[in-house]
Length: 140
Image (cartoon, rainbow, N blue to C red; front, top):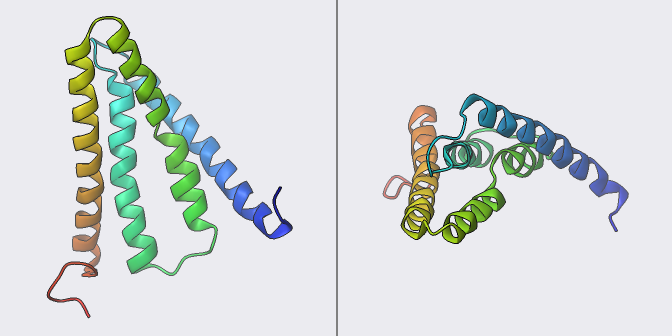
């Protein structure tokens, strides 16, 4: 199953996941469903993708972190916060209810916004921290 040395990693992921899921629930309460587009799911996925861009720059280029930081924040917290499984169910529901155009717009908009959020998170974090890794000519 897993070794003793993996237990802290699994615990970090589980605790982060619990916190992330609670935060996601909070967004669903704060931003109630209106209209055809599931705005809560779109919001958590885009916010989570932005945060993963920020996190990856911070833990790979800016900080020296504890070995449990990435599993807790990246896999646990942000994995529990984002919800691409709910996204898939919502797309299916839209398609089954005859709203194919809305479903396709939701899929395309989510993918573009989520990928854009990662790129924006990386770019803003590099700009704020002065990290230049991966930016091209100034790399060493």
